[in-house]
Image (cartoon, rainbow, N blue to C red; front, side, top):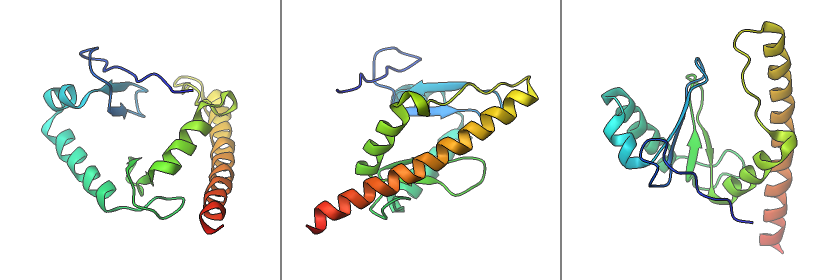
Amino acid sequence: MPQEQQLCDRCRKRPATVHICHADTGESKNLCNQCYQESASPEELASTSGFRDIVRNGKCRYCGQPAVGGSGGFGGEPFLWCEPCRRDLVEFWQRPENAIQEWPFDDEAAQERVSQQTAERDQRQEEFMKHRVSERRSKNDG
């Protein structure tokens, strides 16, 4: 079943293609490219341009194919994916048991529980993706 495209938070007309989440505040924005270009700071635009270069030259974390997208932040390695793996990740993330919980900014015990649940989900995601990549390779080899 096709998922409806999310509209830009700013103009509410065009599809959102830029998704930004600020981990320190929990604030997120979903913008079309035009609204992002109009509203982003010079530093954000430079960062986006640099990340696009990383994706253009990068490989999928799961299967090693050329990357088409990804996420990054916190100074670590970017998380890149190819188109088939992106579709698999969307399927995984849409399952109710894999929903990302709201971060409880004012409750330390709840933060620990959410961190544990996130780590468990990440482990399930790795296993799911290994299985999917293996299935695709078997189809291509057979």
